[in-house]
Image (cartoon, rainbow, N blue to C red; front, top):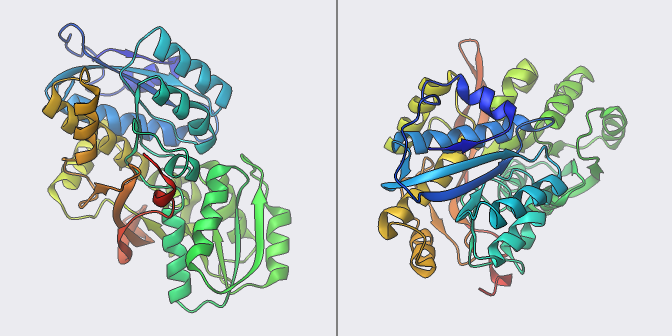
Amino acid sequence: MKLRMTALAAATLAALPFAAGAPAQAADPVKIGMITTLSGGGSGLGIDIRDGFLLAVEEGGGQLGGVPVEVLVEDDARKPDVATEIANRMVERDEVDIMTGIVWSNLAIAVVPKVTREGVFYISPNAGPSLLAGRGCHENYFNVAWQNDNLHEAMGQYVQDQGFETAYILAPNYPAGQDALAGFKRYYKGEIVGEVYTQLGQTDYAAELAALRDADPDAVFFFLPGGMGISFIKQYDQAGLNGEIPLFGPAFSFDQGILGAVGDAALGVVNSSQWNKDIDNAANKNFVEGFRKAYGRLPSLYASQGYDAAKLIASALAKTGGVGDRDAFRAALEAADFESTRGAFRFNSNHHPIQTIYVREVVKEGEVLTNRIVGTAFEEHGDAYAEECSM
């Protein structure tokens, strides 16, 4: 397994037991280009995606589905122009067969349409913007995580079912944030007393919290991934709102990599996810154990998605032996014949998942904050944009 990465990524992997001295592979491996966020804001998400993906490759001895792979990893620094430049280089110079890794929807929209038109397969381990699920879908694009709206739809349904009559909702002003609030409103039928779009990367929410308090909602729903969510949850608690207005969100702001930074302010918060470490199946148990052994930390939702992305590719390569026959490889991807960490998984007609979405609660296990599944929001849940896809 050959890796080309930034200094940050190389330094991170060098600390892992399996990173050094990987065995040389046979000639002409399948080339996989990973563009993800490894520095700056949101880097924890990209690091987890990368680590989950590379764990699956390592489990295969540098192969996926019995086929040698070369994984080229580069840092997009959460900048669309950087991601586009890297993608162009990977397609034109490196001649990658498959691409993966992008965290953010605005970067995915900048990169995915072009690379898929060039004949490269793109396997998304995270970003699932409505544009790419609907009218901008492509036969070479697959999303192994979700369509952006899905976890927010689940929280909209949950908040509706719990009888909250009014809600205040907020998210960053970028494609995933817009999809998030659209998804929540699709299933929540109460009154929205405030709908706020914050700046991407914002960390000071004093003004938003003051407006929220004045609106006096029955519940608050927010989508603020990475450092944005850490700041918001802490400030929500510091403002004394935790005991006054119940807070709800998707897994993105209550994931394993974030809870340690948030601390006890997150205890008891209910959130939605298609994955958790306590899902009881062999694939998930193997993943959780393997990740902890390799990296010395609990896996996150993002790590599970990176791992599943690699397992999907492995399942297709096991059937085709490579990507030379594009139609055969595409059909093998569509079959999704792999054991997902989340259990039941299949693709919709737009190559986005149909899957169960759970309700989780933030709890403490000893001194470690984590999540446990407390219910199910949806079973066999697809997305609202598949009918717009004309593949």
